[in-house]
Length: 72
Image 1 (cartoon, helix red, strand yellow):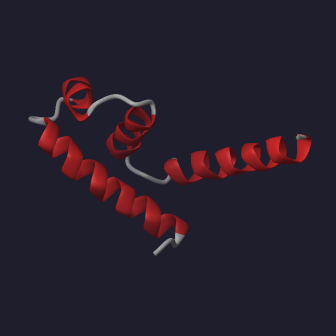
Image 2 (cartoon, helix red, strand yellow):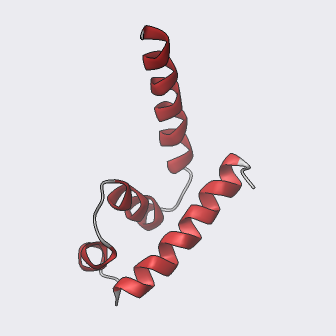
Image 3 (cartoon, helix red, strand yellow):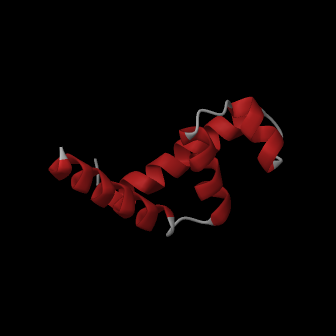
């Protein structure tokens, strides 16, 4: 419905705004992860040492997003 499309657009705009408050590498990592890239692929693209480092970094970035959104 039109109403759902407006809600979705508002949610997307809010997410983009919140992502903008993260440091660049964290933002890139989350965007790649959101596009279904594997931790191994992200490690190669963003020059992390291993996929495990990406996983740990991703979890930290997600925690920052939770704090930004005030989600517990």
